[in-house]
Image (tube, rainbow, N blue to C red; front, side):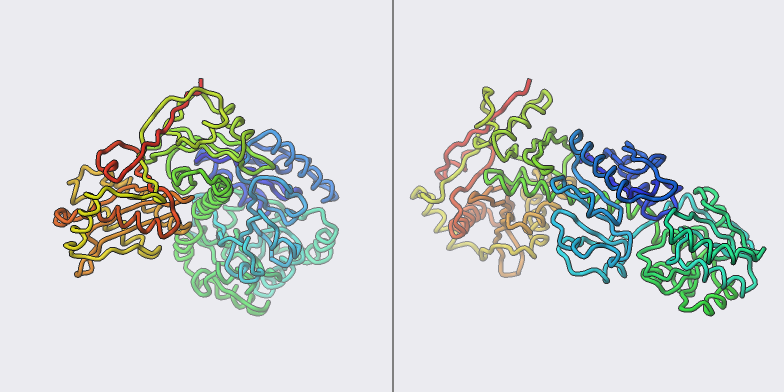
Length: 604
């Protein structure tokens, strides 16, 4: 599924792999991966940002920082993008996201890069803003919220950071120069330990940050052993991390993550960090560095740093800190956000079959034509080959949405539209007949006398009991269905492809979670499932998909018995139609089935 993603950066910080801020580096990593995966990426960020997709720039502020003016620029840019583009998901990275989040727009994902109490208290109840943390310690400090999604830990590009064979006798500190980062403490500890300290970073134009540098940092740099390096690019930072004997992180606030600690580990460089927020999750005490509580302990750790094996640091980085893991999790979060929007549309279309659900269609390589109302999906049509779907629905909330989807479609053939498709109601195009889909009306079920007699006799002889699966039996029933289907059709059945089996292993649990799955079976006295019927249910209609049974039970008619059992169960659930799906096989009409004819539309 190709998504169109709008990333919105913090408006005062440039985005790119060379950026000073961790949030800006993470944004660059994730959107670069999204582009490589075939998604479209649009990034709103200050002028001069380096992105893989399309940059919509706002004025860059290098002097006195005016956050209000920057927020106005971002809001205007968001409005322009949403008016011109079909955005599926928005991703916000700044602490000020609540001030620029549109009231009507597509689903929004928000990465909380900062401590939870730095955000306004009402963000935890904002609808359609899905929040997630970057570490477990940060997540534990968040209020309970239905909008808080699973943690996505940060990662780094391990290929850009490699160890070197020999370390040089200096300590290193990197990052934003501001009071909460504790750089003054980091300067004092190496002085007492008798080791030079090199500092790389940037001082942003906030009055408090400038004053901190002038009053706390500059005086300590009078020690000629220490060096102020200023802002560093990616390559220079990597060279310094490879060469340093250790990296110091004397942060005085609960850090939510630490990219530089991960980069140091990738370079085989031990980290000495205060026990702050997520730092103990990243620095493994005694293995990849030391976690300390006081400046005195930091001095002692500097003196003991040779006990840490650089090769072990790199090994841990390879296991835990690859940005590929976090980028893949972000892509999954984008897909989840889009599919939740899709599901809201699907649930609002009572005529839609299970084959139009996001759980079914998103598993195939399809193109989607979409229409939106106030940023949310109001119509959707899939284009491409759907080999396992008996119906090809189009979703539309109303006539206007249906026409907008139709007008946006390229020349194509929409095959197997169910008779109640909105396109057949609202689009004035001649429809052709496609497949027959026999169905039985359950509210007037009257089986032929001969069939009733056969069912009764077969049931009396059947060596087993009927049952209906619960959701937690889904895997057992799928495994049994695959085995039984293979036994019956000797490798020629519709379920014998491994790709098809993987598809149903994804779909069946999702359908079970939404109450759309129906599994019925016959279990014999030895505890084995000897026959399984696989069906779906939605809107009072049961869709009989496929079944399988042990050939040794053939004389008892297990296929017919299970169909009858499924019909009776459907009646007990208030369903009114049993749909045999496509195909005019004679056995379907023995149940008194009527024909329902799918249609075909051609878009010129």
